[in-house]
Length: 244
Image (cartoon, rainbow, N blue to C red; front, top):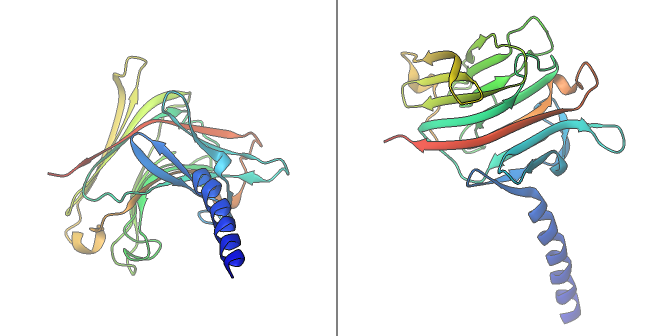
């Protein structure tokens, strides 16, 4: 019996230690878990730990690329902590306007099962053309607290070319306020777009329970980039400021 117990403990230790370490990274002062698995949403896509890392400068890198077997794999991280009302801010490096039509980058919160089902409560900033080059690439979306209501969103155009940008949403009980700013090399604003969502029935339209924050890079409807080239997204920082 003792041998069986010792063997079981050894197997558990060997299985848990390296796997758990591989699933977690630290970014901007917060712990995140890395998504791993095949046929998982959104998409569905294939997800791997290799597609998310933090570099020596503290920047988050997400990749959407082929693995050694030629399969396209996506990257996603989810915060261990949950965040409620407050200001969510991230800075990004990349070509939002020139991003491939099949590629989606997301910065959002998302409900766990105790908060609500899929297509509820979520607040999104997404860079995506949803498979159609004619679509505007910058998308703000608020998903309702009640699952029998539709989401509400707004899309904006954005210049092509690699650039820096800052993206913020302020989540409160009665409203969600979005702002995206194109930055020059000195960090000064070149272009600003904003949208305020303040429905009269806010208790049904805006979530109220704390949720994890997510960053992901993936293929719309599970499709690879239309040009067949790998994609990398770089998030230079994330900051959350609780509402007072």
